[in-house]
Image (tube, rainbow, N blue to C red; front, side, top):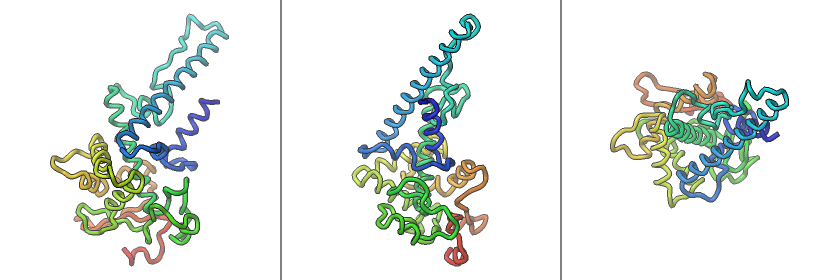
Length: 268
């Protein structure tokens, strides 16, 4: 039963599940430093994987003894055989070192946090209520406020989120992500948390750039790489659409397909 429940919980921890509520990282409370939150999550994942490995090996042992296969089979299994997406040995495979696996997992964990934050900006998700909020065509901020009258992190009025390589709009994706981190983990360690996000993204998602401020690194990820990752996550069926002014990319923005309407292009 525990194996089944763990597999179900693991599947539901990612956006592509119909039963997704929020990222695992947001289930860890009372830690204002994001780095400590990620370390706690990593420890929980390691404990879960180790527990499931022991259970599966015990199941194997029982079956081997029951059928007299002691000389043909062994009960031991590798970490790669624990088929949970949160398990880096299974998720990434290959002959990578423990350090490489943890690096990939940390980067992906923060990419998933950024994706969830974009969802909160769009009104698809909310910090105040688990699961989907606005996910039907034609829904508006009014429908959102009917469910969450006083949101701690409000959705964008028209679900048009600018992605720019420089700060042109006070409510662009980068500035709103900063507000998201402030809302969740507070003001005191805001800079440290933004730096940790930037460092994590530079582990694998984008290349580090010397002398670049944390917020600018996050801006560079959002303007150059986020939509590519979004396409990969949703198998080229994006729920946030990228609109661009052309090859020079003077202006780009994300639009939430469920909130797209006849006035969206004009507002854009």
